[in-house]
Length: 447
Ligand code: URA
Image 1 (cartoon, helix red, strand yellow):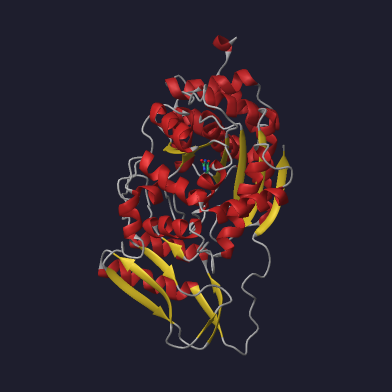
Image 2: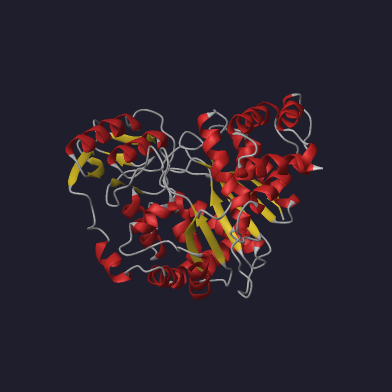
């Protein structure tokens, strides 16, 4: 039947609000890869999807077709369960670095295909590569070996995994169609299922430092991921978490690897926000992997496991298995910093009322920890260390944060952005407490 199909008819059908069938979706996806459907027609279809949306059936068919556009990582012969976590991106979001070794200690395999920093949000791969010698698994064989050896493995999207996503994403980027829930859903799920995950726990970030700014948008994405994932036979939990303030006290690539190590060693005081999100997502991974009946039981087990010190040992073992040098990493803690330092001091006595996540992310990009375009390279040792966080008191002249830059102009520019990001309320003013409410805003469960 494919011979009689025409892209123009499929575009028209979607433009007029119709539901495409699996063959029509296949025709477009295969056509955009082999060149038989030109970019301008694919772009027109993307815009039609942006305005008309997709049914659950269409999202499932699109996801399947995208998975089939490339290779899948073969995890056969490795005992499961296989559970992964995916974050939609935030500032100071180093959760994966703590969660993966923690969950792996329960016998759950965590095959992680992560991304790089882009825009104001950080990327797990850049954080890991700031560890001396660490390299992300370069091929499926290495990925399998590390997964078997340490229970979790870290890799990036290769040329051969979901090539359709690369083509579609590049077109979306230049046609203002990135912000489409069905297209985001298929893009994320196809990559995660191609890496071999059976169950997935999503951290859908919501707020000023996130892709989704409102709870309504975050909920729509969370539900879409859950419904489509379930339709494809996977277990899905989507946890919506607050991303209005940077997570933890450190932002930057090495700094975030360092802060993850500190948490794994038990130095979690003042990092309750980061640990709340990490433990909740880990607990759901235990539930999805059949190691706990409820998230509450999962949280308790995770807490105990953290106290045992085993997850930290697992983290060091993974560094070694992925070519890194655990000794050099540990020696670098507290010392590996870019040379230019600036301090932001409190302008008055009071309490920290707010630290804006988006501006913090921007300052980090100015320092060179993130990217404006995918081809930019990143500096491993630049970043920000917050000595004070929301709700903590501060005296005039006391340092609130220190930043580390590679050049004077970038350090100065980042400092001026951070000056606007940090808000202090006088002692007489009403301020919110350190933890006004849980960072976990909502959970969508499709198990
Ligand atoms: N992340 C993805 O992987 N794909 C999208 O479309 C958006 C965010």
